[in-house]
Length: 241
Image (cartoon, rainbow, N blue to C red; front, side, top):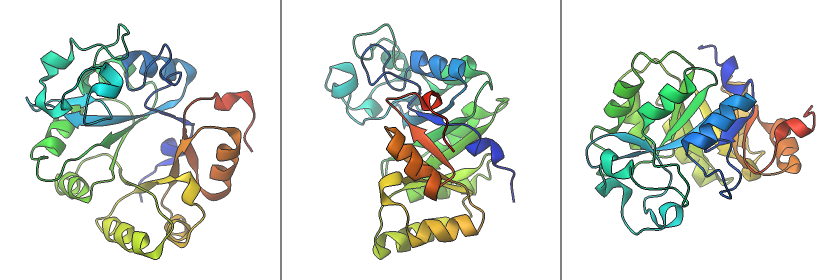
């Protein structure tokens, strides 16, 4: 089994170490720089542009983050480089820009945001961009077809399932994904504990949680999982046993 101790070694800043979109916005180079400076691992979202470039952005639509209507996938990376996030100086960054900024200082956990029937080449483009990067990287997705695409390319990075739910029908679907040979899981902390996660941890798979926003959520995480993805507070302010 792969050594994934680095994956759970430090708290993971959700979409970078932003300040809940007041001055430092999610999924921006400013948020990623702040996370690296504080020694937090970075979780972020990848979308796929009209010119086949992986960019760091969560939503399908650009209204919430950029104040303009439009599908992120209908824009080119060049167009997005001119679009301000939250009225700040930050623009929509490419995955390549993120890699050049972080330079292996902290681990990166990259979540691919899929769109069924429209993801041809997405997995390939992500792996091509990552080629030669010196630093810890993990890839994950809610979308089973993207996990299948990534697995088929035999990447050198651990692959994970992003998921939630605490009902047997959810567990059946998740177990189907795990049969691809995935390495870890990122799970909604409010749905823990459950039999699916307990079993996967028994099998030695690390479990991260999302998205923890207070100390109570942190405490819950460390009772039932291995590390948290957090936002909105500083996990170093209190020692977490």
